[in-house]
Length: 188
Picture 1 (cartoon, helix red, strand yellow):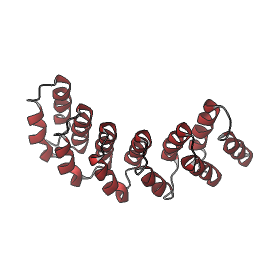
Picture 2: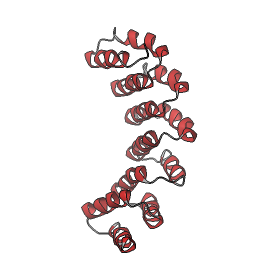
Picture 3: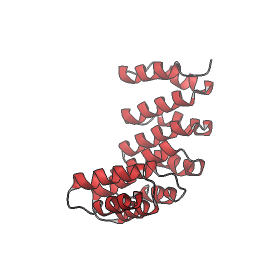
């Protein structure tokens, strides 16, 4: 019974309707199968940008070490959204072996990608990323700074106190608010 369902969903990933393809990818998130994984891999390698982005997000629900090389490969994509989506999923999965590549994305040329990298790092729970997040507080883009502040708060390390207190002097009230919130999450 479940095999028929999987086959139907895999076939639906090639449907002419983007909404049908999206719904099929979401359904395959729930049903972890080799067939579903292979269909997502096909989508990652295809020319349909929207399908590729949805496939990246769909990899979040698949608990297999095979997803990591596919996600890491997307960090090299020329498509900002593909890199951002891969960072989002890598952050949610927070696998220690992907930490280094995620840190490197803080140097991406695109602010949105850097912001997704900073946000992803907060999910890893690894305090070794603190110096990189503190450096990201100097970024010219407010979204990158906001993500770095949130991640410092998520880490909860007392070592983040000084840079977060310094952010209270920033001229942007939204960043000061983020800093206050993050300070409240630090170890006492």
